[in-house]
Image 1 (cartoon, helix red, strand yellow):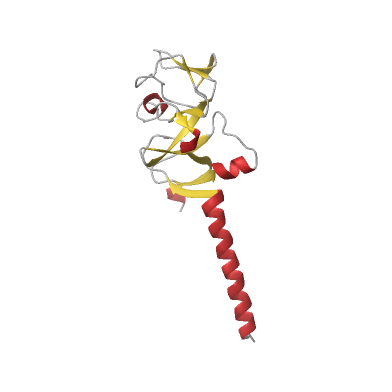
Image 2 (tube, one colour):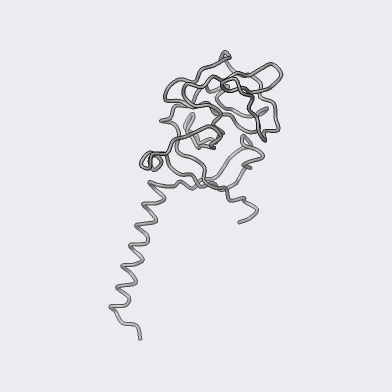
Length: 168
């Protein structure tokens, strides 16, 4: 038989659980939805994304490195992009659509060519406190080629996982 004391203990445990979940998803993780096709095919419009917040990364001494997918704020909106270069790296975009970072050709699994857009002049050295971000769907994305380098203060965190909308 359940007593009032049992109900109180259950209520206290539920309150503790709610507080822990609130703290985790306020300060450690961010759950958000991807909008647009900037990161296609890696991320699709409507995918649910779990992001490891920058403040938590700094607490454990982690850094943002090349090939991380990050969430960042630009013009008051959240965007996602792949870090191709960090502070001090030299980015070169050729007329043939190839990307070179520090003299090495990049691209990996990217299916689309990378042409220079905007007003940046190449070769371009990424300034301190910034990252150079490109979308995977490079022929139709707004990224560092147009926005310029992304300040680390604008970075919200690093992508951990993607929950496809068709799997929900």
